[in-house]
Length: 350
Image 1 (spheres, one colour):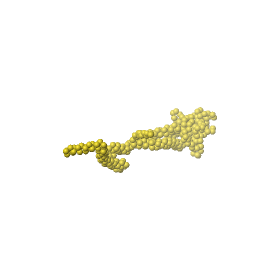
Image 2 (cartoon, rainbow, N blue to C red):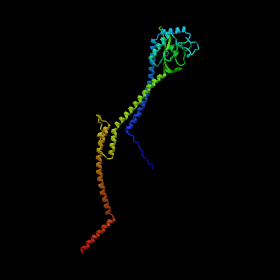
Image 3 (cartoon, rainbow, N blue to C red):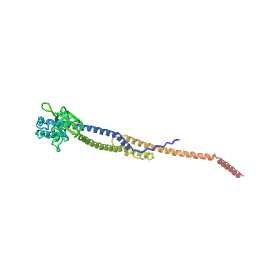
């Protein structure tokens, strides 16, 4: 015959069970919320930066001296042999910084625009003589220390950016692209003169790493906020689960005492002190009624058991007497006693 061993159960309080259940249910919700926050924030940062670049370009065009832009290139082309650069001269060897006042007025304006968007590089250019070639006109970096950006009449042909397309229509490049100077997002816009003719283009670059840094900063701060909120919420849940389960723990303790036969229990401490009753109050009232009924039944049972014990003892004694009376030994003793009484009476008559 196989023996079934009773499986031992490990004790885990109801408070911990509620807390663990809450964690299992709401942790995925927190994770999903954070993923949504990450995606939403990343998208919003990129949109915000791109909108700022577009607005900055439009502001730059509004304040630009278009006539001076055209005159500058015309004068330098006529008076300086370096403009345009000779055929075959590369981007590193072409370009210069002219002494023309129109040039410095132009780059000063671009520098003012850059101060509105400090992380951006603002520059202008025109169409070159070669296919896909552009020639730099001005750059806000000309007033930096050290000097950076397009030089005047610097030749540039790009296969990674869409700079040449900016000479014909607005081009927004929000997907980061890389060139020899870094990884960028850019917007290009044609420059129109008073007659609506395209005379060049303006571009604004911003390092993709800057956008990523802003995104990472927001996401990092958001993560810290989520972790703090997670800890606080689950700490509060643990506290509240203790408040909810405390009456149940008290009822469990009292029930154990009742099971051990101690019916003198005070359940008033478990009553809900609020204006609204709940299941705990119902259970407490039920146990109060149960205590009285169980105590009364136990007293009745004890009386009946006592009576049964007396009846059993009497029956047992009668049975024992019967066994003795009906035994051969007892019958023999009775017979001898009768004979002795007869002999005693007979001797007495003589």
